[in-house]
Length: 426
Image (cartoon, rainbow, N blue to C red; front, side):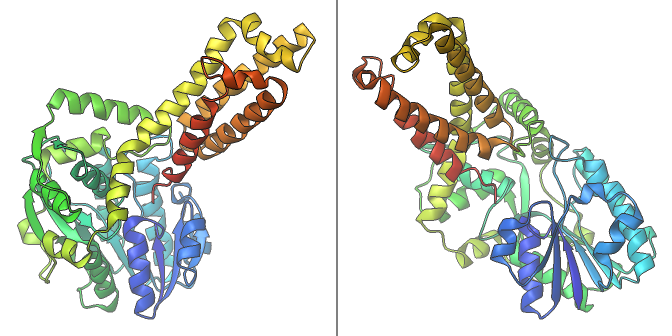
């Protein structure tokens, strides 16, 4: 069968692609950024496109032509610098259903979300609108509603859980008693495969959950999985989690898709559960069985702890470069004195000083935005090496400066290199 997977480079989408390829299907994948995924899964026919821009049926026809089935794994948690929920999860889907019906697509499998929660968020509202539209479209469909998905890899909320589990000496958790149901990533991929073959009846709307327990228990199981001793759970007060989520929302406008944003907090406050009468009647792995089937290695512990360090590293670098430029601008003549070792002309030295300060500020600001952070980190390394080379050549005595004018550049380069290493989200 020729199957098109939307969001094929994502946490769930990539697992679905691998399962469908193993079953012998011809798989096409659509994602907003597919360069890494295309190297990992070269057998998928990849298309790089922002689904949120496909707002009319004719926008979809070139991508779904000849496809027998479509699996929708695309989605976003919250509006932000990179995401428009109404465009992505509602309007684009309505246009897709209309185009799919005209092109004779045999079935659509939709990965949706549990709706049994007190948190009424734009994420759930747009998912619900798309589900209602799919049911009314006249297309053959299956809707799957996985609970919190746990797999060998981690992204978003599952990455946060691993990071909390790896926290030293204690485990800070907001809403530790909130009920959370989980499902194995492989079980979700299996359900998609069964929906395509008809083993799950067309028209089904199923909730997938294999295990249930309080959030603190879920984190404790992950801590044991990482090989760490038990730690005391510290309940994070609601006002602190509110401050954290407000900060994460602000970062969302800069393109950072943190699992600490207010939507995630609101959902977690009410718990991740589903309707009992909609549960899939199929064997599903428990959380313990899922973790036991994927033993952790030292790389998992390192990744969990580095996740905690990602924001401090990037924030430190960004603020350092901005502060460096601003401080220089407050005393241009004094800063220009350092330039006169290789620029004799005083006005020229001061002009170069201003340029260097503005460059530092620009690089620091660019590091704040998810779209430009990688370029900014490379710029930090390149500019730092240039400063180091120029200083060593024209003002070598600065190596012995009591304030470490040149010595301090070396750890800057190392920290920027570390930032590059941990920048990738998945």
